[in-house]
Length: 426
Length: 146
Image (cartoon, rainbow over all chains, first blue to last red):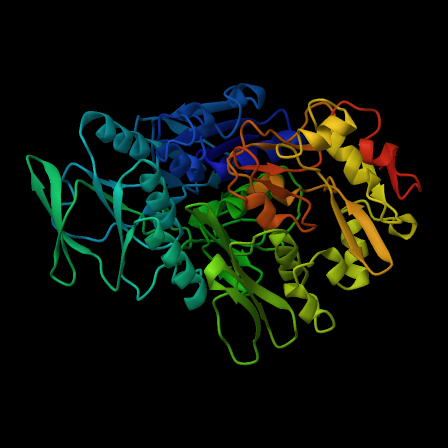
């Protein structure tokens, strides 16, 4: 079998590792427009912050392609797909035939249109080359004042990293508060305070509307409210939109992302999509949607890979979640922690002075559907497990926020199921 | 592969497993030195849960499909090629806590004693019998091929 994978990140790795568990004979080609081997995108902010060197960005050992018998086709871009002929064309002129094709094309950084985007010192932040370009700017000139556009998880991470490097950072978020998608007002206000204490200027309800330059390098920006801010670096950290153009052009069904079923199959035979580009099942909202997070990307890649080699294990669904740290204070948003809906109930515990906040959201059946944690993230995964398990928690709700919270706070049957070991129950 | 099995009905909450886990992961492997001089740089890899008469020691469950492995952004979480055990390569971990966010048993802990890293049971790597199992006086922990 000839397998072609477009993309070279978590989804591709998930697919390759799963395929090779069962099948050594098929050929696997990975096509990636980036010239680099497999690296970890979510580690880029750790690299930018100076916490790790470039070598630690390697998500898998450098001989991964060899050990997994993969033919990498790097620094080349797939220009079109022909689902009828089962071929993809690349910009370098290659025509690759496939028996199975996986589109793991990820997302494109969202950059709002404005004047001055092509100015030096203006960056998005999704690729190694972005991080390297910022790094190069640091070595070539004295960079002191940065503006980060986007107060979500990505913007927070970039802000934290730039502060680590000693920059004075202004964070601009168009919504009335930072982390408006992931966090509720209390969680966001605590993280805002953490940023302010760290010397970050936080501007909400405001964003950059125009970029000005001197000698080709950014010198200031005009904000939406008309004010002017001097700066010598601008980073867009708004987020990504699915990179689904190839699929759309090939007549494959695309909504916001590429539409897939529980096996990551698209509307075209033998074509799969997974990761940030795919609109896959989310078990909390009980519908398909795009959720650009690393665990989903890896798992969906693995499911697609398994299906390719004849293993039909449907996706149980993802849970939208993310973790961020600012100035050492960790924060997590898991599932629907920020949704208020009729019939939902909330348990919350707040200690603003210690930058601690815990909030659990339950639906009308007393199933946990979301959690927000700031400061104390100990054993957070138990909450994620409960969200996945869709368990009636009415009996033990009150102990879920206790300081001694653990598996013993949970119904005995669930506890024993988990404690005996997933997959090793007797 | 061999896994640690918990028998909560036999656990008497003596915490010897915790003590010996700490010693095992100390540099000196000496109980006095581990507690006197190394306590600020090492932590036990298991969690004791206790409520009324029920208690047990919880280590990484060595899941068949480990959520930590798919969530890990650094590649630190991996399967040992020889034993198949889920391990954290601490030299590659950056302490992003994604694994903590997804582990359904809450068996992974933050180690903030040095560089931020995720801390979990390593089955006393290379040992025939993990220290917690070997030192449990009541066979509330056993090490079995499952």
